[in-house]
Length: 180
Image 1: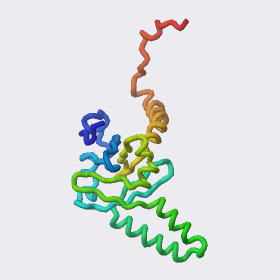
Image 2 (image 1 turned 180 degrees about the horizontal axis):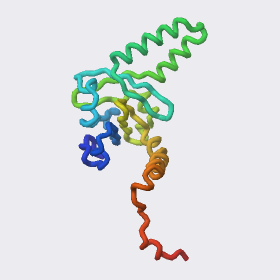
Image 3 (image 1 turned 135 degrees about the vertical axis):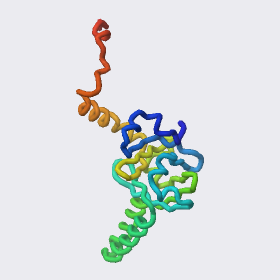
């Protein structure tokens, strides 16, 4: 797998939608490289030594945000929540927050190391990759296995919406194939 392909590999890129998806191979030490096209869409990804916040979501994915202001606000809000909680719940809330909020960094070349908790959640070690998804000015890392499992739903949506626009792939020549 080669990362950083220009949008021209995908004919849909010419439609002008700010969406992108690609598979990012997992290199040594859990490192992935964000494609240039993706980094160009987010100013905060091009700042040398940027700190990022990965917000773990259900469905084996995590939204990637700039630490400033999102990470700082998350920590401030968590501190207040933990301070106001019953004593018996404070440690459990802190552990839950560790599962949900993960700090990362990215260098000028777009390289980032997936911290172990995030790599584990996204099943990156087993799959050897993660999926990057850019949509609606937002950025996510997805488990490639989850992405593939949901592919049929996306293709069915396209087929349903486009049934009058996209010609059927079934040709009349297939009608002559006999099934014995």
